[in-house]
Length: 180
Image (cartoon, rainbow, N blue to C red; front, top):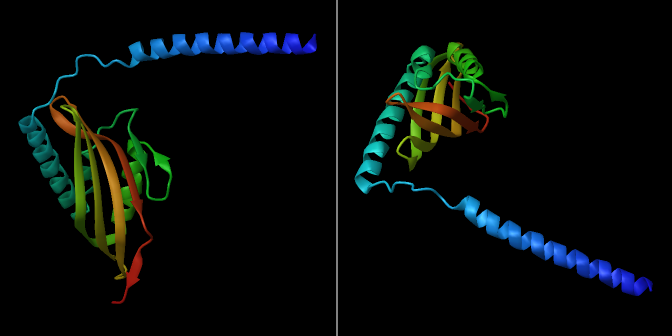
């Protein structure tokens, strides 16, 4: 009797599971169908890549000038803005600005030597930019530091006709002090 009851429950369980899976699978297919997403032409993609390349070149020139106010104009100050700092902390626009302003205030010079960049156009108004570089800093104390491995990602959104970073993530190995 126990065996018949156990087999009946098992058969009922399998039947319900198959029914839920079949219904769920069909529902998911309908939900994941994409709407009419326009295909971007190669020319349009190339124009966007050139816009972002020029923009980040200008940005890194401002970084080398240690001009925090101008640097922050490349970012969009919104409640949704998010930054992941090299030390692993999360921050908003103001936290990113303060962290970099504190760093810039200790530096006499900073040079940025990009080694690789990847521009991935996601849509006509959304671009993922990834970079790796080396940075060399001379502190106001005269100490020289080299950040051999710095990598970052910026998510750019076209807002009111202008590209603005709405997300920033930077990772860096600890600096190496160089002899003076």
